[in-house]
Length: 463
Ligand code: SAJ
Image (cartoon, rainbow, N blue to C red; front, top):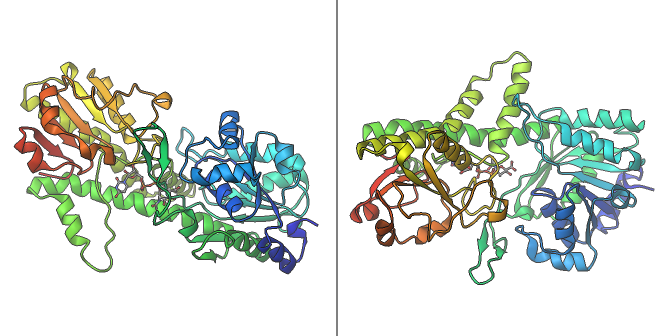
């Protein structure tokens, strides 16, 4: 009998004995770490993905991600097998995790396409007793919407024939380090404070059994708490407010960053002094913008849903506008500094340091740097980009090395505060540039050191 058809006791006992076959659909940023921890903790896991190249890289243990050190062994022991073949992935599976991307569509609503595609692809392989667990961040009500879509495709009923739960991912991107001698990325996951197994999780199920079985499966590899909430929708909303809280607080400090320098005050000093208050203040920091496929996306899920309900979500919308305004704000800072040195932006060569959406993470999705580059190109500036953390072959813009990026430039824009940029030798760089001007978009460099070397230093949030 398949897991959800059995009594809760028997099912949970089988889970604790790792005697359940698992399929993870979508073995990308969220799904592959999940599959890795399930396999590391004794489960046989099939990873189903439409991306053939990714599947091959997983099965050869060569894919680059934060838990890659464990993958080779798990693949050799056949604890993890990736495949594009649905039948192969689902024939023995009793628990199915869904971790596919849920981007925005052109009207800033959640695009449900990947989830409906999953439903269509798996419908013929679903059987009574299976438990489906969704992890992707979604707009409220999406999980049950997809569930009823599957019910129409299969005549199977969730809460009767199939179990259903939502356990939102709380993925914490972990820095990767490129080692000089092998030009390979080496994971820095070991010893990371919030690696996957240390992050508490919440679960909402269609019924008590779905919730308890889902809690049981996560408790096999999550060493922190796994907390049940009253409904799937509560779990969906919890995920959204976690990210919206961050987005709105980042917007607040980005607004501060536009105000306090006018008082000749440094917003970072202010935030860090406020941070000394032992309660009721969580520091966020202004910068060149908010990227990644989570924070700038999840807020729109709720904005568009609220507006459909006739509720104008002023704060969240303004927060999005403020955070989206930071790339342009940084370019404005550049233009006003160039003007002071009688330079025109369309006759200037601008060096961009950092293409990734955040420090030490090889990921450029919705990166503010892409927006800055396109604004500069619109203004006919000559732009050169350097990002030693990101893989050149996947880059939408030409990446140059640290040896070449500064030659003959009129300004250097620090957009992503990768650690590798902290080793820059500015007395040497001073000899390479045409105009010694730095715009610091991440409070990364030292004003005094640079000014001592004769650089003009400007920074978001500083006078
Ligand atoms: N950023 C700022 N100021 C800050 C913090 C971040 O400008 O004070 C910028 C970053 O530079 C970056 C963007 O915001 O461009 C997002 O960075 P992040 O560190 O906030 O987020 P992600 O996308 O890497 O991960 C977030 C995290 N969510 C929260 O911390 C609430 C992570 O825990 C989630 O699991 C992840 O989204 C997700 O998958 O939802």
